[in-house]
Each structure stands twice: as C-alpha cells, then as structure tokens.
Length: 259
Image (cartoon, rainbow, N blue to C red; front, top):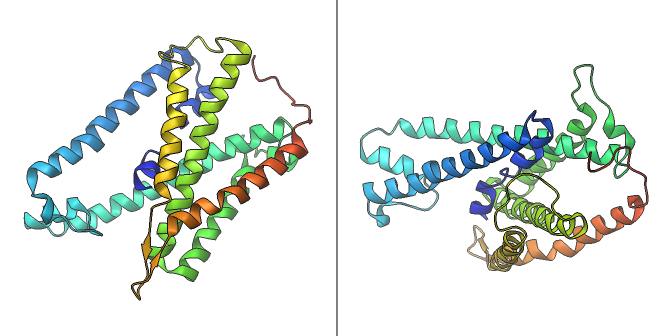
C-alpha cells in the first residue's frame, strides 16, 4: 500500500497535458523526468541505505534516514526529516486539490457532475470544485479522532491505495477502449501500446489481491484484517459509481472529447 501511495500522482503528467502549449514535446520530456526521479530518489535511496548500515539496524516505525543520521551523531536531522515529510504531505494535498478540481470541473462541463462545480473565480480558479474536495479532507480529521493516529493512517493509506489502483485501472481501460474505437488516438509516441495497458491491468489486479493480506494489530494485540475490510468496501463504491453513471450517461457534453 505504501508503495502504491508513494507513486500516486504520476498520472498528473497526462492530466496537465491539456494545459501544455506543445504536449507532443513536453509530455515525453515530463515522463522521462519522472522516471529519472524515481531511479535517483527511490532506487538510489534504497541502494544508499543498504550500503550504509546492515538491514537489522533499521527498525519498523523509524525513518531509515533518521537511523542513519543518528548513527552518525546527527540526531537533529530527524527534525529536518519530519519537516520534509510534512512538506511532502502538503504537496500531495495541493496536487490532489489541483488535479481532482480540474477533473470535477471537466465532468461538470460534460454533464457528468453537478453544474455548480463549473463555477470559477475571477482568476479562473475552479473554487467550487476545490471546496467540494476540501470537504472530504475533513473525513481524515474525524478518522484521526475516532481511530487514533496510527490506525487512521493505516486505514486511509489502504483506502487511498484502492482509489489509486482504480484511477490507474480506469486510465488503462480508457486507453484500450479509445484505441479500439478510434484507432491511434494520439500522435505521442507510445511504444508497446495497447499491450502495456493490458500488462498494467494485470499488475493492478495482482496488487489488489495482495492488499487483502494486509493486517493491523490493535493495542491489545488483536489482529485486524484491515486488507479484507478495505477490499469489502469496493462493491459498495462500485455500486455508487455505477448508479451515478446511470444517472448522467445520457447527458450531452458541452464540448467534444477530441478537438
């Protein structure tokens, strides 16, 4: 779940393509930059940590970077790492507000969401959609009060991971469906398509099955099958999405998908 959540947001490369002046040039450049950052900051960090300390020196619940700097006598770096984590969390919230706000407004323009979500400020900010998303952030505060910090985080992480998997799966499925209906739908280079989309769907299905084995241990030592409970919510959300689609699928969009 943590790995899925860590890669959440890479789809923003495609979402922001609509605001690029030259997407044919900028999208491949952005994709290469994302891959480079993954190799440097994720793979590179793991290799560096493996070379600095034996694996048994790292403890669950403690940042490996804090452990390394603590061994070097730089315990104050832990506070710096906490600031970095908080900054990353705020950045994630900000990117979520941007991307989902854009998607909500587009859905409203196409008749697939309430029309009040199309409202824009004088500076062309989709404030109605952003406020609607911000309301869902309050759920996190309520969960933190109800379940406690660590358990609320585990539950939110699992739920968010399912949402990310659904989003990526929808992107793969849309790519396959559009290619089947329209043929080549973009001039951008997409080597391996559509087979890479099928491979992605299979990988996401395997990850979903693995999530079912995730557990959470309470303070009393009781083991809670968090993964199974998370997967059990999928039919409910799928039903809600299906009912919503049945209500709006006959609405006429205000703009064409391809222009």
